[in-house]
Image (cartoon, rainbow, N blue to C red; front, side, top):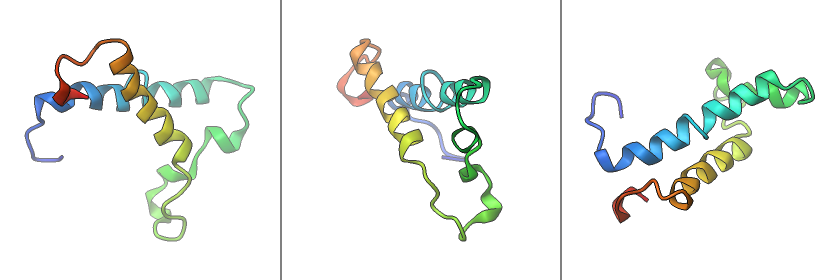
Length: 85
């Protein structure tokens, strides 16, 4: 979306997906929890120099959590109209 105006109805879902409780919260928890194994803490998907050798990486768990975070917005009543869902 670089250079484009964000649509107001996308902001809530995008914030939930990328920030709290989405990717950012998940990354913080992974980096701070000593019981999480290194292969889960330090994902290779952030090393864009590896593309295309390791593309697309293993993002199912990360994106699954982020999509669940968007769904939580619905459960918590954060969406004001159907277009935001």
